Length: 367
Image 1 (cartoon, rainbow, N blue to C red):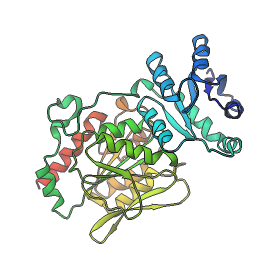
Image 2: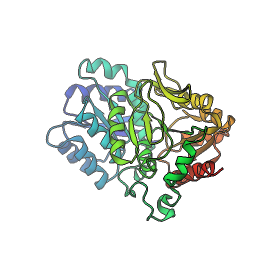
Image 3: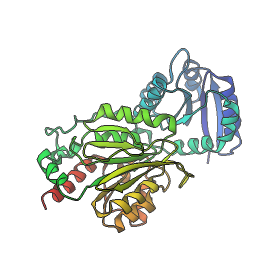
């Protein structure tokens, strides 16, 4: 097989040099060139188009988000975005995911060379993973307004949205349902699509999306603007209630704990599980233990097998479990492994998952 051809675009000579050295140690990767900014990058790409692009977010002449949009409209290509930014910079990096970026990689503001060398494996893994992604399934999609009842069921399943009255009945029972969602590569846009359809009376939702710590708060803030639900980064002590969504903070594990008559968020340090922190398995196992048959588990697009073992535990306790199907996944890795292990009750296209959740909740409410 031909090596994966990579173009590195960054205004820092140190970044260009070190990432080039890091990637060149792997025989399956070829650094075909570097560029100080997107303008020079496009000049090089006119002659030789790369398989994967690594791009900084903040650059002169043209910023990384504008560069990404131009790449995705010219010739869709896997792009890994790097950022040292916080605040607005982190928000721009997260927005890049909605425009088709495959992954975000965090860079420190100091100790850059040592950091890049220490995380050499992460860059190699990211490039290899990006090269397998179907970028035509990434990027902007037209989505219906949340709780829209005018759309056709084939397009967004919004006809199955739960009436507030029925969800009110559900809240008054002792079921305390919780929806647990896990995802990785391609998952940010998949999560957006699911949450943008669910109504504000949906039972509490907990989410693990594989993402580094600098970006999860910005991701939660972005989701909060796109849905009727109240979305925030999870913190220990948060009470899981209808209409609220909690995103696991990067660099920490997030779990669910029943305390008295409430389910609460617990955030803890700990070693990576399945190479990830936060880990989907850690969340799912806590949901299996603390929520049991009242839970609904959803595993979305992503590479690897994180979440498969935890989802199996959820199913064994009686929870209903859904997996995104292969045709709608950006990477059919995590769902495939969950299916292989017998952890999944039903596989569905992404557009049908919100409706399936709502139908299940309606059925429970009317019992």
